Length: 326
Image 1: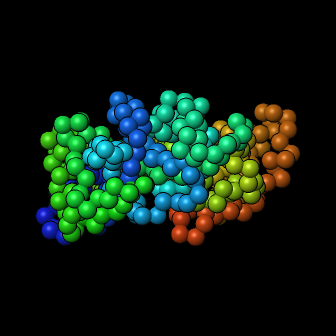
Image 2: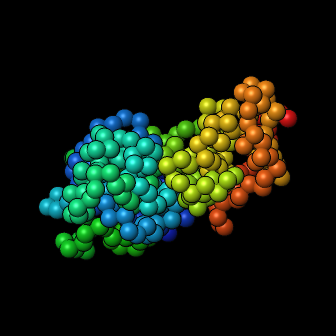
């Protein structure tokens, strides 16, 4: 459930995972098809508020800040929102495979058709064109009787959206209206004790957001081989989610798909010294593996500056609980 703050400088409620010092929000314009499809879904942990142009990353918010959905005019209402986690420019096929219905479309073909409609360009049917991805966690969708009118200073010529400071007017009134709409309907189900108190200081990532965040953090290159062909790169969990691992950068690494498979099955690991280790079991089980043994001892490429590397605790878990050993 929402958490309340008595600090007058802050918005009145902070869902778990929200940045407690966040005072900024952004109202983005979307179409009714995207909204109507998503509000009918249950159990959504994340959505992709995508932009068809794909030529500029969204940078108006910091992780954990509030992103709100507004329908196209003349339906000048805010109808839901979510909490900003990450933005990226990605091929549309990767966005679809990462988020599926969370893209607000029922298929990749439908998503392509809608993106092309807004792009208004001729595109080869085989082209995997780039779209902008605004990745949001904890999405909520208000019933029509609780829709919130846009602030009075909203201009009809706004195309993509605009930001609001929630500590001053009209942002302060906007956040109170959103709070009342959410609280009265109890649409946020955010009390998930598995993640403990840590969830209070960062947005909780879903599988799709994790995948794109890891891909960007490692600059779209395999951490072991340096491979840059994006379709064969995969975000690997060091400690699987099913085994208590989380969708966090400290638990992720970008690997070429074959290395990801070997890593998950225990034939390959990373040492605490950030070097590759390949198990002798690989040769015993498959009577081969020469190309993979050549990777043994190689230093693992770290993520870009400013991004967290894999934690030593997660590496040790993989060494002890998944890796076959030398």
